[in-house]
Image (cartoon, rainbow, N blue to C red; front, side, top):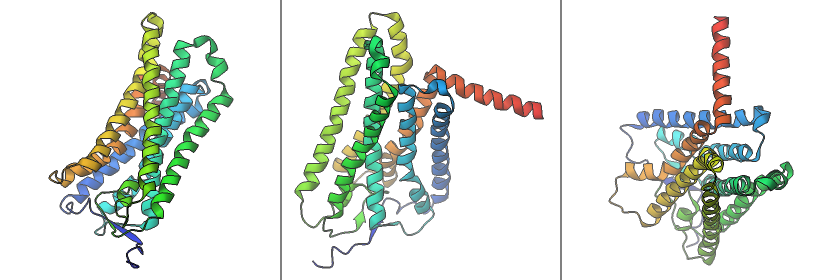
Length: 313
């Protein structure tokens, strides 16, 4: 038993049957990753450059897009490398780091979406005090804690996973997550159950808060056409983003714990990638298409570049 804990490399088994079409998968994955960067960076740059968008809702959106880049950066570069490699392995430290980044990105998503729900609740249900409540200083504090709390909680979870005594180095996935690493432990650990349970409960509370805020939003908006138009303009993209994140994450978590071994490996890989593919693309697209200010700024920028190019030609 003294030798089993000396594990320096994990083996990822999710890509064992891709030899015949690894190049196609590499091209498609690279294309998706480029799209993720394009749509998210477009929103981020638009919000940063245009001072008229320096409002709480757009600042939260900018952080949401940045978080999408942060989470996907923990997966896609390594996955692209593995697609062209014959040895699908990852170092012990790299596995822990990847798990931390993926988990903290998902947690930050929930924190930022909860902040956006609070912002919409104050803007629509309490418009007279909106500017006094959502000051620049307070928004900065909100954003700071929206990043700090997930990083702290997942850092504690990662530390708990790192001190476990492991008896195996084989991970049945295309990437590392703390839950799968802890399943390789030689002995059961109380911390393995308590800390994730606290984290899940904490972020389920975020979802409950968002649901509560939307109950009040819908009640308020039904009595005013102006408020209803504002709800459709700014709240529908947020509600859609929250639904996509929750459904994608729950789908992945339920499958990871209760999934059947009879499902083909390719289907397993897609389900594992779902929350790293759909939300990072759909979130900026939904907000970019639905929010008039952002849509107009992006279109003006594109049209301005096109006009300048035609004049030079």
